Amino acid sequence: MSQPPSEERKAEQKGEKKPRSPVERIVVWGLIIVLAGLAGLEYVQGDAHKKHLKILQDAQEEAEKTHEPVLYEKISGQMSQKPVITDANFGGATENLYTWTWRGLKEHKIEWYVSKNSGKLLGPKLVETLRPKPAPKSAPKLDGKSGPKQEEKSEPKQDEKK
Image (cartoon, rainbow, N blue to C red; front, top):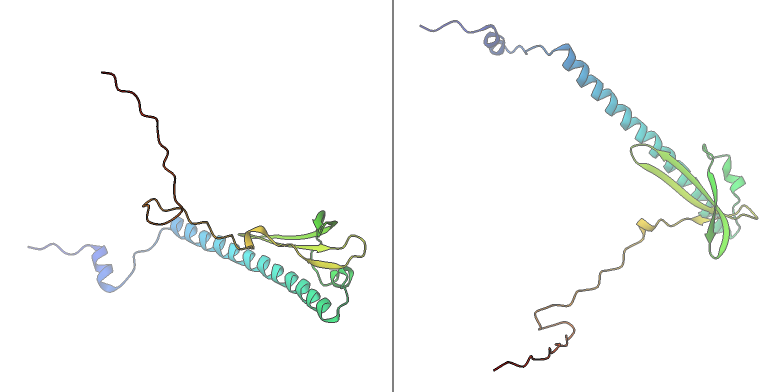
């Protein structure tokens, strides 16, 4: 004879779900809140970076159109963050390098040259990682059919003893 199904099997058959433990719920909701917070932080930092970059790029475009320099003082009121100012080499002269940094999940950074004497915006600093890397030189093929000719080195023969 068959035994009556257990309580768990009855619950499964009725479509009821097994209740989760309170610790499991706390852990899951805690992770959800942490991930949502990190996503929010990254969005806010990335958005601030984009706004500052747009202000600087628009000022640079305006300077190119009007052929008149744009002073940092003119756009500094639009910037919500103060830059870190360091000396840097720009075209053989020592100028100021203004750096804005936002830290989220990744670091967002803008580096822009500004004239030390006049305060004119000079342009962005080119980041080394954004420049295209030179193509690697092709290695010579060892099959002897193509590639540069390789000279064979002759080794002196040893006299055989008789």
